Amino acid sequence: MIVFPAIDLKNGEVVRLAEGDMDRATVYGDNPAAQAMLFAGAGASHLHVVDLDGAFAGESRNRDAVEGILKAFPGKMQLGGGIRDRIAVEGWLALGVDRIVIGSAALKNPDFVKEAARANPQCIVVAVDARDGMVATEGWAEVSDVPVADMARRFEDAGVASLLFTDIGRDGLLKGCNVAATLDLARATDLPVIASGGVAGMEDIHALAAHAGEGIEGVITGRALYEGRLDLAEAIGAAGT
Image (cartoon, rainbow, N blue to C red; front, side, top):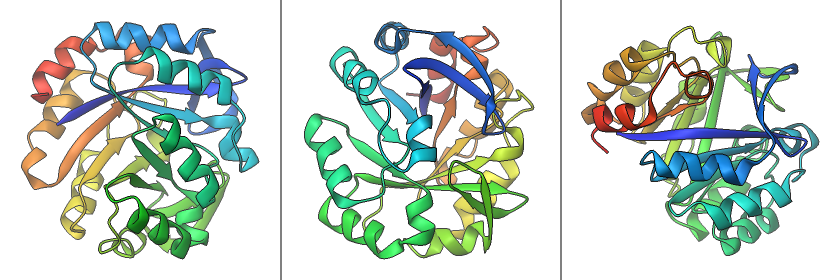
């Protein structure tokens, strides 16, 4: 199982939000590239980066910070936040981003996502962000009437790499990952699932790793790392990556 340390960007700074609320942001640093190097030094081979401003604006807002991370981090990086057309997808892949995470557009324009995935096999991750079991979009500001599993199944045969499942109600709150809901989604679809939202410590890593053989590909963790509740090297070791 892959451990993805997270770097969320707001106004060029490294932050974490509580439940996706931009007004509830905690700043953890002003040098995203240096943070990426710290994660690499702890053994991280993968990185999850989100342009939070871009998620709300619908287009890149932290390009300089993302490019700085790309230059600094020696491993693989997946990027999300405001990527909603083929030009943006192709542009980021050409710059060296390994996988593109698409959320809002996956619900509102699934054909675009399928076309992007077919053109770039295993390079597109569909973000399935849930509030009370329903898909949320637009930086989690809107909640649809589409159940999580229904949306996930739409992309099974499109060449999508993975699903990224976030329980919004737990994100950034250190409440513990929703392992049961993550596992339910993994069992409901043929696509591997990355868990996100609420990771509080090693207990969550062990619980998810125990189901790696059932379709859980990885886990994203942010606040627990920044606040010293989770040791990245220990988590990577326990995850078997």
